[in-house]
Length: 211
Image (cartoon, rainbow, N blue to C red; front, side, top):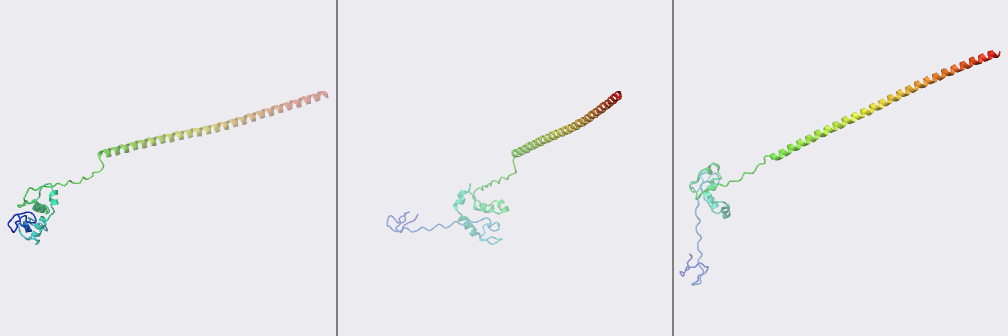
């Protein structure tokens, strides 16, 4: 507790008995903290002031640990000693327990990122079903088009045969009409010749009787 020159103990800035300004209390000396591992090369320090491998001043590293923000300490789920935190930075050295650790060491597990393994089984099943459905539809469409093409070709073939048959019938009818006409003309010619011959014979016979 600060004590005034008059001997009164007071915690205010001025003495409540004599009114003098209270002397400023000296700041407490910082606690000397040692590090267990060198922050540069990771070599065990064993309480030395300098690293025996790289020559780094270990007192500066201890001061940096003391002046670290308190927010970092409050954000950790459990108290972790600075010695153990330094040891965790250096691979094999981190697996050696520190003799100056002041509390239990908590291991913070970082969740591993989820790696996408591609489409799910449900998506693959839907894709296969869609491909099979499209294949069936394509086959049905091709079969329907083939049936329509065959039906069209058959219909065209029937129409072509019908036209050819009609053309043959027309040619036969014309040939028959021509033959009938020729036969009729021949018959009429023969009848006319026979009639003319008979008329000549009758005229000759009449003229003979008249003489």
